[in-house]
Amino acid sequence: MVDKTHPKLDERIEPGNWTDGLDMPMSLMDQIPEDPASLADLANRSVVSGKQFSREQAIQLCRLAAKFETTQTMGQFPLTGKILISAFYEPSTRTRLSFESVWHRLGGDVISITDPSTTGVAKGESLHDVAEMMSHYGDVVVLRDSNEEAIYEMLDVLRIPIINAGNGTDEHPTQALADIYAIAKWRPEFLMDNPPADKKIRICVIGVPGRMRTVRSLLSFLALFSPAIKEVVIICNADQPFSKGQKEELEEAGLKLRVTADLDAQLPDTDVVYINAIAWVGDSYEELGTEYRLNDSSPLKDGSIILHPLARGEELATDLDNTEHNWYFAQARGAVYVRMAIMTSLVRF
Image (cartoon, rainbow, N blue to C red; front, top):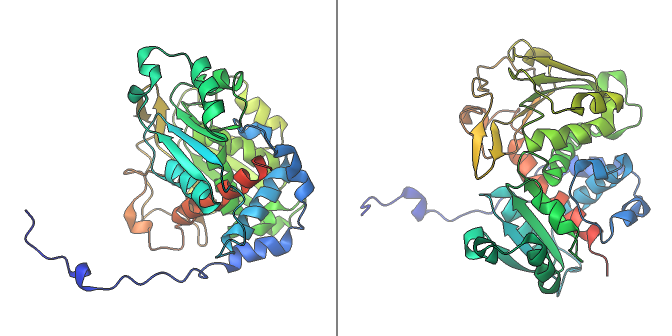
């Protein structure tokens, strides 16, 4: 039994000022003309891959996310009476809670599965039958599964949209769009067709594109905005960092790519540093690039930002949390509004 009274128990919890930092999403909204027609094609569609989105759809989803972020009180609840099936067969904190938070904020109800061993799958039920039942029980499915093919098998049967919340080492499209939203708030010119030369950015991605779903999806989205990117430098020591055809496809889309194993040599000229060290494989995970670490002694460029999909390990030190480089918490906060934008575009009534 703990017999020490924590000093925080004697303090009232003061709510944060919700208007702090809203100048950035407001600036983003001011720069982008609203074009809801570009989002009309998303209605009643599933979201499985970052490759599904056009450049204009990504821009308008960022604008809609900014609109949600700058609105403290919802004037209407468009998902009232609608049910989200939240099926997470891998551990998750931010992704699961943000999707469920979004659905509640928009007026809907949530039913959850967090352990496949408690479902019919553990008794040998097919994904075909699972999808058939889900079509009767809810209005949208959010699925995280270490089986890369599961979401594709369910697509053939489902009569409601399904959203990929991470499928093995394949993709995590809504996380990647949250990453793009964070960059766009920090540098609104990132979304311009022809940004000024001094506003173009250099991005370092610490990770293995062929093994990490977050990195794979992020690169697909970055390819939509290649006019604003000087270079994307992949930091890893893998012999084969890309999956078959991946690098060629990205370069054909306009990204200038380079691979190196030397992190510190790149940091002084890098504007955005994206770091991840986890890849989900089967029912477990593997750590990749654990030798790469960021801390307050890293030679980071003044004004540069760090993004991380979280959860973090030793690759990202807590001594960076109170520096100007910390955008990973804002990135996680923004994911809620990005998913609000996606949900309201998908579910039309």
